[in-house]
Amino acid sequence: MRRTTLLNLHKFKLTDIFAGNKVLILTIFFFLMGVFISVVLRGNNQTVSALGSKIYEIYRQQHFELEFLSVFSNTVIFNFLILCVCFTVGTSMFGVLLSPLICFFYGGIFGSLASYMCVTYLLKGIAFNAVILIPGYIVSAIVLLFASREAILFSYSVSGLTFNNGIHNDLPYKFKGYCIKFLIMAVFNILSAILDGVFSSSLIKIFEF
Image 1 (cartoon, rainbow, N blue to C red):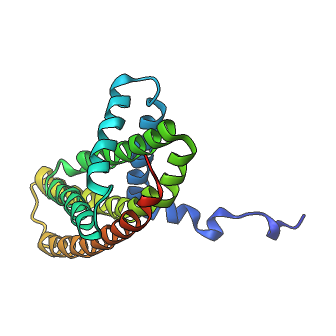
Image 2 (cartoon, rainbow, N blue to C red):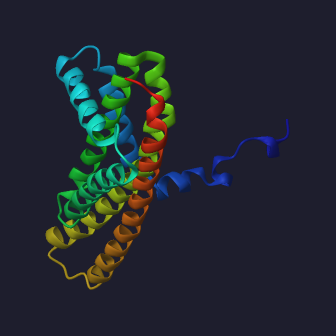
């Protein structure tokens, strides 16, 4: 076999990709861990099981038998609250620790709701997840992951200023960029709310729970 046919990771710069996105990978990891733990504990822990039921009731009140504008407004408020929390913790030195936890709990909420639908309604619940729940949540989940990444990076800059007792002349410029990025993500959160409103108001009537 020719040496040129061997897979060269360095050639494809996979290591560079991982190194350049390690913070984003961290947020994805915590999100998936939240989903995984909530699903695994669903049948073995009464607290997690009760939490899934409670989340479903809240979701039902905010999505079932409502018009587009009602679903849209409920989703926008929820998404903006999460985004504001990410923004706020990112401006403190604790954002490095708190931002991954936000991803973890968000993943736990999604996993609890999705697993509750599957366990309670079986095939109908699986279809509901595939047709309505996942498409409605996917954009907001992606926005959260990127928001958490930005919060971690900016919090790291704030922490460096605090512990090193140095003057970072570029911190105001970083904060300006930080605000701009969160404004862009807020726009995508509105898109997420539109998708959620469309899927819920038009397709949720197909399912009778």
